[in-house]
Image (cartoon, rainbow, N blue to C red; front, top):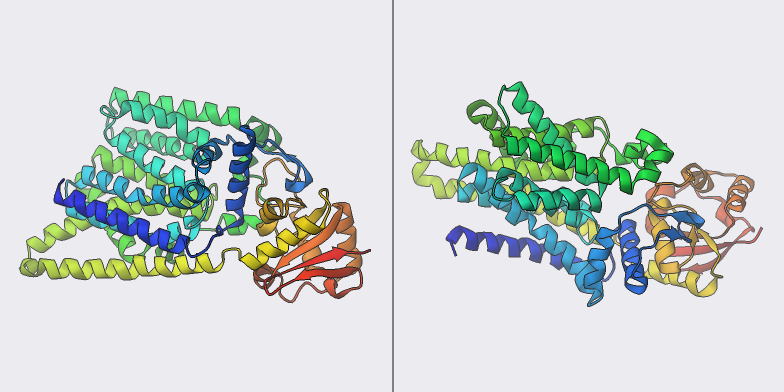
Length: 486
């Protein structure tokens, strides 16, 4: 094994150990969406078929999902839930550093610059915030996205893999079609530069794009028929669009990707555009342009867009690192090259690893606690099966998973009526009558409020719960359950 490959394996182990260290600080999962995926995975393990007609979410609705990710997790869950939900997602995300290294090495032919990019990619802060201890579909999407990029760089050798991924990515999640959009932009950039794409490249892009479009239309036909073009925004309530689809902000990008990585990424891209202008540079440029445009048009969420952008910047930063190393060798500072590289690594540690550490701590701190789960279990043990429980949109999946009861709404918005306004009104109104009217509309019998969500969203606004129509039936330090009496 080459020395650089040994170092790459060491980096992989460091990133994996870092992620697992935080993951095993709690038995629970971070994010309400995790329990959506866990619930559907466990259902497949029990019934071998996916949960399509969900009687609990929104009090009863149709789930539009390919469930490929849930089948994938169910295989491991059949042996050990810890492996399925804790280890496998973190292992897949740690493998990103391997993909980034080989892509970077293909571009720069510099293994040391590629190692710096790989190490940096393992500690992009936004990846920690959005995927750590989270049973997230992006634990599969992001590594596959990176590998498909690698296949595109070596299309003649990896054509079969590219074709297979052209099937797999769109089936797993509609965001897989993002890669096809990037490839179309790539062809346009080549045409604008009067560069004729290779026939194999043109055919591969056409095949992947048409296949992705066809698969998405088949899987999400009901959604497109019901919502039209607005299906792109996943039927997310208007009030939440500003938080899901934030505008671009340089400070936010810098904070979520890392200052040093961002600087070297920009430098690497400029060097590539003005000095090399090869097909690889156009491919990278097309991907970054597509991501920026979709973020600007708010057609992908800020968090998802920055995750993809972070990986691309980590790859293109290898060109910046490569140029920086070569420049040092041409100057009087060549004798101090080792010291300068040490300083650079230290800066990477301070601007990526350290923020990732704080981000990971925050993720674990905000993970649902055992006390909250106790309150949800109380609902399960002390209410009838048909009971509807009102909770915040970020806790709707907790109601269906832990309490096994109907919720009013959760964070999966496809093919459901907009109830967000009503739920917000319940928590914000000063009128008991108005709150009771809305809860009667949805047959709500109990209200669940966690301390964390209360302090985050409703501190100082929920006044009506002191009324005699609401009886506190269960309470601990972290959560409270109220019964509606009127």
